[in-house]
Amino acid sequence: MLQIHCNYFSIRRLKHETVNLNMFFKKPDTERAVTFADFEHGEDCPCCTRNSRRTFLKTAAIATAGLLLPADWAKAAISRERMIKMHNPHTGENIRAVFWSPEYGYIQPAMDEISNFFRDFRQNQIVSVDIDLLNILHYMQSNVGNNATIELHSGYRSPATNSMLARRSKNVGKQSYHMKAQAADISIQGYTSRQLRAMAQRLNAGGIGIYRGSNFIHVDSGPVRTWYY
Image (cartoon, rainbow, N blue to C red; front, top):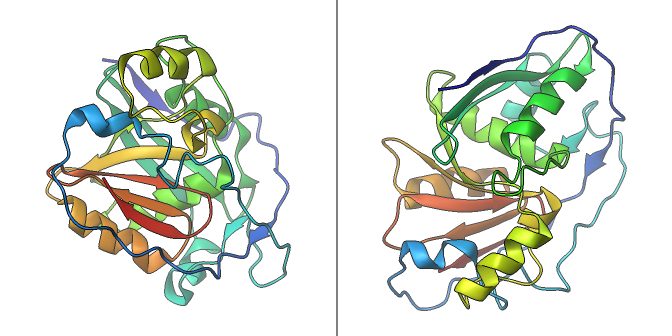
């Protein structure tokens, strides 16, 4: 099993910007059962629709890149290291990476390692993971503790992989934040999908998809909205 550990060698800063996420959550539809076959989303789901896009607004509200965070967490986010600890059940890989620090800002080697971890393992294609998505995942990590491991069920997905999955299932969306490296389907041992949803909703940033009958959720750095599968 591959273990990935990031350090501070060859550090360089990335551009800082903030995101205005003052939008409303979408009300869930009536409940229905969901299976793992629904995992890859559908053409009509909010995270895959062609018209969905992020709305950015540069502001000096906080001196970090990424999201407008809850006040208590924002204070910690600008004064402490930001770390994620994840496992990919498809590849067997693990990663524990500090991707931001007060001294250096965003740490490029760590960002590169995380992007490799999120790669399309079927095509072995790598795309840089969106910074806002990493901040969302770090917020989740900070709520469950640094010793907990986030399971990555789906990260970046290439057009070729998306087309292949679309031929196998009608639930695969033609447009998806997964194809932009802006989405992750995740679970955390000991937490239900409803608990993870409540945790993510407190951040009020990006999209949240809840898979009924499962223990994982979809999170992305698109517009603020919530939906059910």
